[in-house]
Length: 338
Image (cartoon, rainbow, N blue to C red; front, side, top):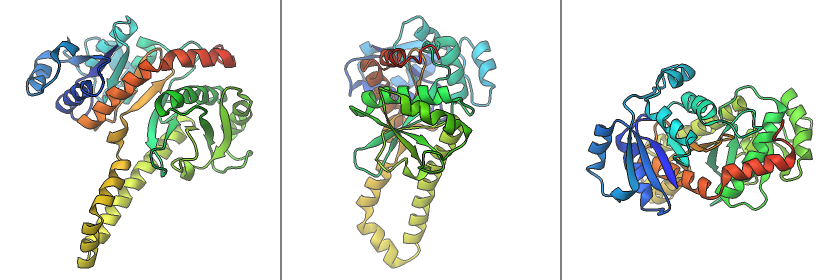
């Protein structure tokens, strides 16, 4: 198994990206690495690290696609970029998965146009793994931003793909799948939800449990939450912002008095554990479900721990046969021709 990593994608490239990718090698012996980017700079970073050199290949790519560039244009014009070179290798079956913290738009465009969609999938979806309030329990949210506008068939396909990935990534035998809405009653939601609800309910190979509100995403009662990309992204960013704001408010309150500072000192370990449980770096990246290879989008500001976990996440998705299982499930549900 070969995992490609965009060494020049993200705010902390190449140092943190390369270090994180190499660190993953020690935790999983079943794959080799291909680092795409400027050879000299990658070699400079690697020279300060200890790793199994036989498992790392540098693939030269002299240019970089930035987040400021128009995604489709950049993918077409920058064939020698660290991202597009990786897409070419995936398409040629020279690698099994790709991890990048670079431009989300370029990654989606390149994954769709250069690698290709799974037959019958109208639109690939961005699927992050999120923490919940139940210890050890995680939840998938898709689409988290790849498709602002969706049709009912897209949400149904998201449910099938999310169910497959929940089995592979979360180890859930029968995933509970919910539809994000503005209320839990069956008739709640907009026109899209009204069209998708009966189709989701009719699926035979998934356990659809109905509508949920955004406040219940992290309850731990569900394994997959389905939404259009606009609603999913708003929900995701709202959760991230709320968590960040809550910690800031707690810090300000504790630091405002001597008694508060003493209390903070006594609860220091508990707060650290809580913060770690909500830290995106612990959960790797978001998989683009629906493309013909495993593609993982790491956070743009990801550091080595996040990249390490994203690489391991990609390796596990390949090992579990996620792409092939999605193809099989879509065929069995009759959605491969939707």
